[in-house]
Image 1: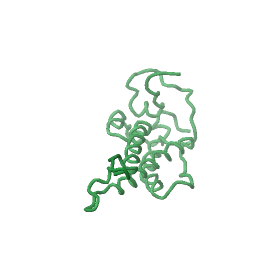
Image 2 (image 1 turned 180 degrees about the vertical axis):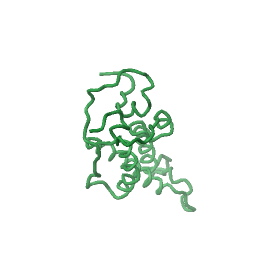
Image 3 (image 1 turned 45 degrees about the vertical axis):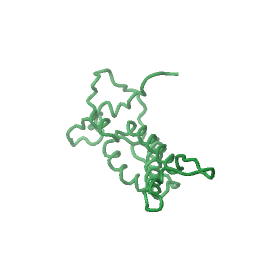
Image 4 (image 1 turned 60 degrees about the horizontal axis):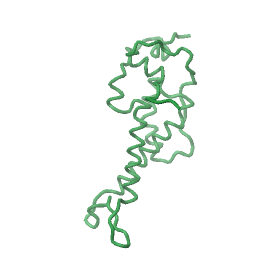
Length: 158
């Protein structure tokens, strides 16, 4: 079992300008770029996929083996949206995040628990794909070149 933060993918280190100036892993697996949303992805999650995938793809940050991770991100965003819609206060229920049990006790509603879990999941995935301002602040995208994506990620065009 290892301790400490997970290592960053080499593509992210290159986009960040290799701030640690350590030797980059030139033997890191290089899966095929791009993937498609799985057919089982619900409509709300598919909308999120279509929103974020073009950006990730253009930066070369998503490959065929990343389909599950990106799907999990999309599912978490969909869950957050669905839970948040259930938690809109109304005149009849001004505090929908609180549920009254049959015995009269107040507890956190299921929708609020779902929202909290989705927020935790989203926060975890933010680092994986550079989805937070802090994660993006460490990435410097080089100027566009005619060398294509390989040149952007530090490789040589064929």
